[in-house]
Image 1 (cartoon, rainbow, N blue to C red):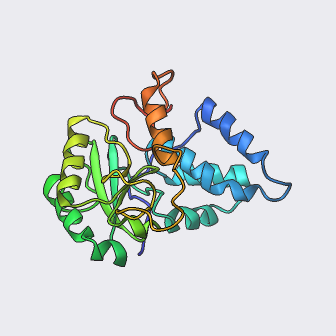
Image 2: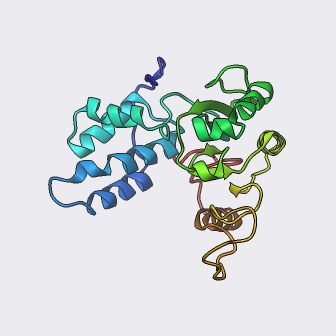
Length: 235
């Protein structure tokens, strides 16, 4: 699928002091001559700050990593986790439309997006808060159909559950990620047939982290990478 940079670009990009300090610490994790390996985390931090990846952001990351800008763009345009155009400030919903999800009803999820958000993908609606697009495989086929919002997955969806999820986002209610049928990880819906040892965790690690972060009092204006209902991006 061909992905292009948005036609409207900001004049410049600059990491905030906090994010610049974070980026420099990331570079120290890599051996000499290998700092280009930090391209994905730096691009994602730029997106968390601005909400999307712009051409100036790509150029800044390229300079920090001693890479040609076209090489950084190749990474940003390959992965659907990077948004090359402005998206909803609260949530950009990425609906997996690849075969396993399609067989499990992703087309009905897309219809809900068209009905409740916008007729066309990448159109920001509801006062600039919500947008959506169809993407390629998100790699959680056993929990199909699913959508991704920021770094969080919402799995085991059906038309009704997804419609309710969209309504909550529009209303300012932050939905809990993970399986929407309350199953743990990718375990079968029925009883376990093997490895019946007790599961110690109540929730998947990513869901527990989400719950922990959301439950804490906000100590800064840092934007949550998944859904931001109140704060603006780190600036």
